[in-house]
Image (cartoon, rainbow, N blue to C red; front, side, top):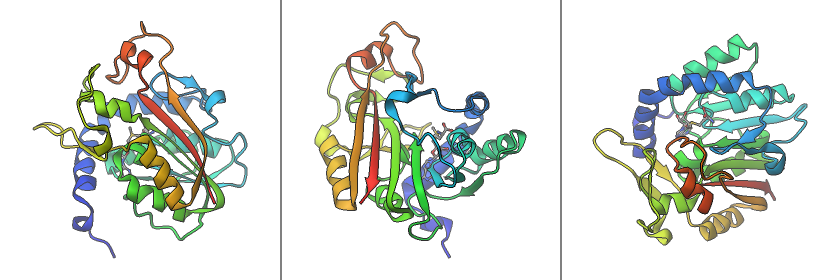
Length: 260
Ligand SMILES: C[S@@+](CC[C@H](N)C(=O)[O-])C[C@H]1O[C@@H](n2cnc3c(N)ncnc32)[C@H](O)[C@@H]1O
């Protein structure tokens, strides 16, 4: 049996952070739950048909969302026919997810826990996904091997999150302070403490070559890598990401991997 105090410090810090801000994500979750399937991904609503982050037909598949938040991605997979588990580190986020699942009559298994250590046997799933969940909040050296363990051979993992450039140029990401300056050493990217007295959350990222080495060492083949560009520099600021900046530099990355 695991005790909460055995969780890594950053998982506890992120739990406190997400329990504290969960109420700010309710409206967005409610909106996303009304969309029957993804038509766009990420901050700039990149066309889903170009990214293929999710199989078209998921009939009979076992799927897991790692860091499911309000679980609208999990709901999209269930509507495509999958049997879906969502794991999240925040009980408050899961409260919204459970309410929306019941309201929309969608059966999801939602569990409270750390996506780096999922209480399921090896090879339990055909497909795993993370949209800004484990993808940015969990340690890649833990959650990528864990996703690999959970997948059947040939199973796929898709994830979407911040691009390493954003981490290098972010003074205080989340508040729009992304600079046209290289503020943090690219080669040292791993754990990013954006901490101040209000925000103790911890994010993770890696240099692109390190992501690729990690995938290979873990036993994943890369099917696709996308660096997402905001098409419209005059767009409204969304999620604190400067539209002009993200027209010139990639603010988001998306990977599709297959377990060897
Ligand atoms: C921006 S939300 C993304 C989820 C979903 N796509 C959404 O927008 O509702 C980030 C979620 O990751 C969760 N999270 C952070 N660290 C986690 C971890 N180690 N394991 C599982 N979930 C985690 C947070 O609790 C939060 O609900």
